[in-house]
Length: 169
Ligand SMILES: [Zn+2]
Image (cartoon, rainbow, N blue to C red; front, side, top):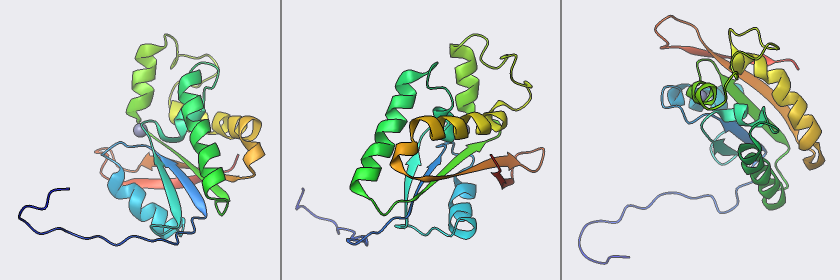
């Protein structure tokens, strides 16, 4: 690296990280200020105690392995790598959220996606939680992770506040 001029900032690392969870959530910038304190306060996971898997769509990426096989494979491979590299990880926290842009894009890409007759059409990311739990159980149970599903929902019309509910699936 460059040796010329300026100070080099140094940041703290954790050489002996012992993560207990992988937390899957969406990269949506509108919600990052909510995800971080939720993970710390409600899930009880401080930085270094969990592996963030931040991807557009969050847990929703796991919902459609048949329709979106590449996206699903990307997630499945990451779970398998994490499991191999960090056997201390026992919890898989899967978070979906309301008004997810990923779902809007999917609706453009896949005709009929949001008008699936099985869906009540109102809140697809929320309705997908059951499906995500089922897929996790079917295709990722060999990793021995305990899945916990949460749904982030805006609590005001201007979308300035979010609450997270645990889904009992
Ligand atoms: Zn999203």
